[in-house]
Image (tube, rainbow, N blue to C red; front, side):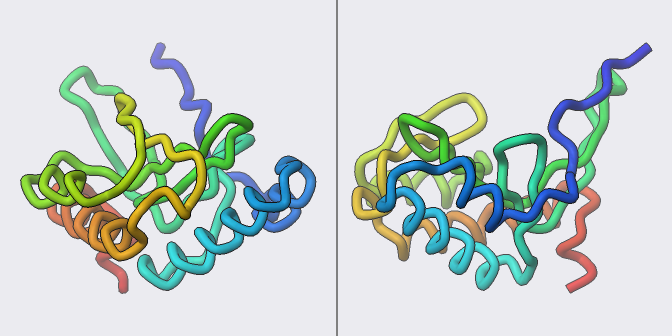
Length: 146
């Protein structure tokens, strides 16, 4: 039997989560700024996914192995050490955008940044929109309803 996904949409309020989870004022301010920007760019309100990811919209994926599930189109998590940004899809445009993105580390499924002032917000916007477009073309997603 397939394992259930740990990261699923919850009913927790994103603002309540930030106020209770994020300790540093700068990180709180950056978190609320990311909510504002990602809501605007995606056209979706923030939803909590799992205990710590704030996501916008959703798409359905299915692997060749048969494993499938739903994930946010874009999102972030204000982790203790740094933000995890879930905004990257492996497109040629996004690969080029990384050149002007700013100070970050690349993970397997996310980009890590310490604070918003370390990155170029215009590049983040292009990356988010490119990722939403990529997911819309390659997966079943809520962005098609927009």
